[in-house]
Length: 477
Image (cartoon, rainbow, N blue to C red; front, side, top):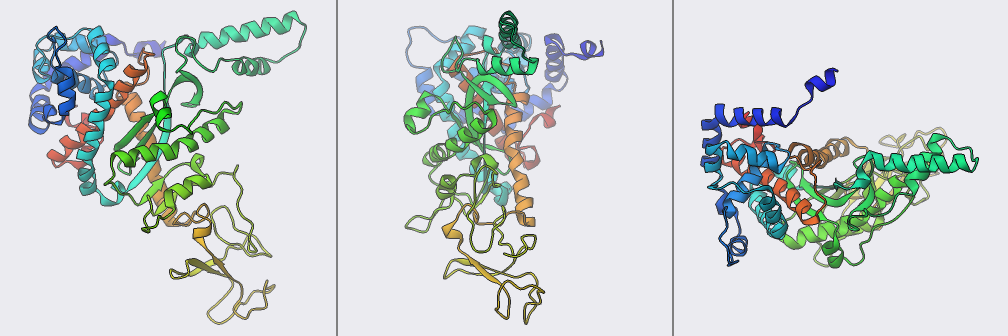
């Protein structure tokens, strides 16, 4: 009973938003008017396309659409209907958004569908604008790039819990009719296995394992820097597949393995898109989870070209147990550290490196300054075991850094910012739970969330308050 008493509804959300805009109106309006001029960041191509002659004048300006939709993301207004209601009863907010006549729900939908590509281009331009801001705030974190994938669940019948329950009841009745003894777990496995690969209403909405469960949605990849600021968003749709003809979805029964393979294959095309759009960007460190532990990815991230340049200097990716490692004379553990051939519990200790010859030197841990004092030596050499490894010959084990060290552990913790950024966009900016199945509308909502995040960076920079670059709500709530 307590759950229902505390559950929020549209009335509660509207009341809170109304109080925010009425009680803190001067602070909020001054903040937006003083530190952000949205019209300055709308590309000319966007304006030209919006105001092209259609034979009918538009009721709302381009600035009005973008301003209101950005505020919707910032203040977590879950539906267009609630946004319209708030705009209708707030003259000050309409003035802030330069709206004389509030658009209806269908007009907002058509705007997203017609101008999704221009919203994406606007996001790309804002990435260029905010890159030097991020560099000035924290040069170290802004030089780190983290990548992950997620999905936006579509509003289709296959995502309804009743859909799988119906399949469960059908299989249960079938087994009962044929006198086949099956446990409920086995029946559920059979039901999940029989789920169609795509939604019946839209074949571009695919079955996938995302957000911790099976769902039907649209998958995308997102790149952030170490500050958690979005740098790139790619939807794995038909346009993406046209640019990268080798990219395809796998259909494997094991959902965890399927997700790892799909994530790994998306890394190279997504980063290629990112750096082709921003050729002047350069970063030193790449951070990713174990799903990206593949030899081809290390080659792409770290392999130097003829000019001795590579995308990154170091790749912080944990080893995945499904992959195998080389077995040299000295065994090498999962962190790339050589082990004693006679006692694999002993790790060799680093003993310098040779830049000229491109190797790292490791020595016996029981070696002192003069000789090896091991009771059971693995070599007749006076100074004990010496192992030289050549990182350039195995970028997977030596991705510019050594796993399990203090430096590795400290830097790798930063990777969670990409997961926080995804959660912020989907939850705090009301992306998840949207009742839409249209591809363009979904993309527009995600890029509007990215635009709202980058506007927050610009406002925080203009206010000289870098601690608010991820959320402006703290300034007005």
